[in-house]
Image (tube, rainbow, N blue to C red; front, side, top):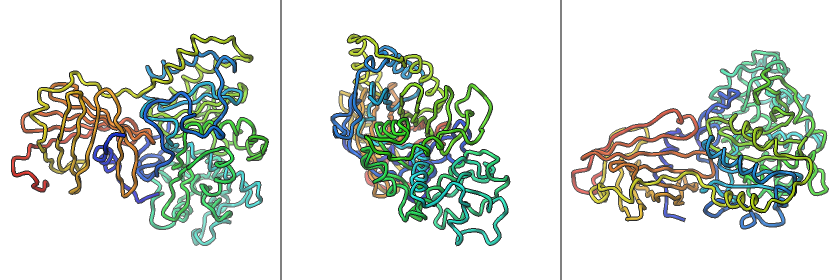
Length: 552
């Protein structure tokens, strides 16, 4: 992982760096206080992955090599109604803000898939804590190779980084306790854990107070997942990413996975992995098949069973999918299912009784609503035998999936009466949370395309947006290029609204630029993450001196 940066800087760079056309997750519903902030759950450090095309995609054939694609089928042939899947998609668009993609697999066949533009089939997506289930798999493989056991004490692996006088509880902590999030920590002790520390993150974990006997007290614990990654690296000599590459990623056809790392070069384990939607589905299908893939046992069946079984109680509500028990970095669900999940709605849901897998990426503040929609719409549609072909319903579903898009900004008019007045003028700002020094609206076309120049820290960046559609570009962050898409339009005669999506993440930010005389008032709001409940406001003034003056 790259050095820590504030969420403000991330938001700023989203606005500033859209090129020519072409972070910070909030707490998990089960209370993930350690997983708040862009520097903890995947910020700007994610590298570019597999390239993709603009727009939604029904089938991944144009992106993913045929040899690595899951087989495709019609829904009815696998016992599912196309109309039911269409109902799921339509209700998701009405009630959830917003799904980024989904893929439904039945009997090993992909029967429905879609990406809301600018998200696309060939683009990786940040998984957040869904990464934990992959880390668990690495642990299981290392155990199968005889490199450790779940009963090994954690201190066995790090004698040089242990406290001089470790507590009895720390000495009793086992690998099993890391896997089941029963390390004995209080959540306030692991909140704001310094994953980006310059010195040893392992040592910082081992210095934490362990208030309870390990194995007796469940607290959602992302630092514990980091320790699992560190242990795998200790016993194999490879990062979790490199260790899984020949054992999991390559056999499954998962191309170009990326995983953020600490400054000590350890994959973050609990978050930081980015793969494509179909890769999530493949991973779920592997677990559904008890670790077997194309005739080979990639993961021991016994590990699959252990990892997805309930080992720890995490509540008693029969109505909550976060209180059905916890396995080895997998959640138990209602209906007897299990899943890996990540902040803002990243899901790999495995439904063994129905021989089905659902992979979902999203950017929502209400993760429970996503699962509830699967239970309400998809689950009743999973029938025990094939259904009669329904060409009309399937064609309707196919057309819908081909046209999926996040709602772009639509202009109330093709342009504003202010457009010609403000074009080419520079507005300068005093100190503000986004560190913006100036904004210039360079050009506006009759069709609603707008180009802006935004100056921050003495560097000009260019933003290009389109009314009623998405215009792709990139941000440059510490030498790393990250894809962006923008849409913008005049939503009032004095207000230009810009929406920017980082489409390899769930993050989208909306900016409202209101012109009033010689002033420009800016208001920004992010969809999810630590800043999702805050609106940033600041006002700039028309620069009256000679062009090129360095603004404050």
